[in-house]
Image 1 (cartoon, rainbow, N blue to C red):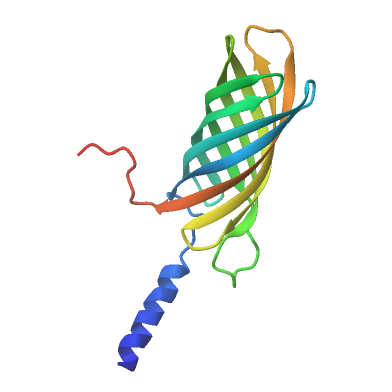
Image 2 (cartoon, rainbow, N blue to C red):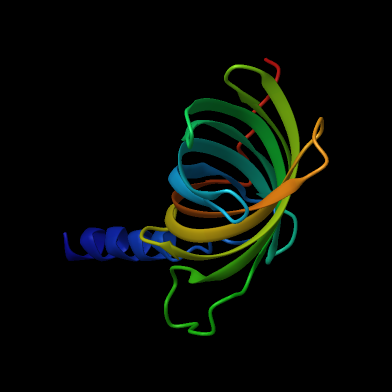
Length: 183
């Protein structure tokens, strides 16, 4: 019985100590909500759900895309919908004794967002951000991030800078998971 228990414990330890941020792993997740400050136009509140999917291109670089769905309350109510391809660079933690990843990341995005209210307005939204990721299990990570993006409405000459704050979640699916596989 002791040998069986020891073998199970050893198997659990090897299973729980696998790396999350490694080349080929696929991740899904996104931010659950964010609040925004528009530099040129004052403070506004934006509540968004931003699901994301990505793949680790190397042990530090991830590429992926996100979808923005939400609402803005600033001089009225506006809806938001868009797509945001991104690249992310993970700065690996130096503590090799800790098997769960934790550390900072940098992210760049180039999105196209449509704001709808009285009129439809489409904007190009390139941005950069910095965040902190902490894996609480081998497959689930929590994130805090702040982003700065330039919002340029295509029908308007002027643009504005948006500062956003978000709390998110990442789930590691592993290398052998196929998200869009024909059966």
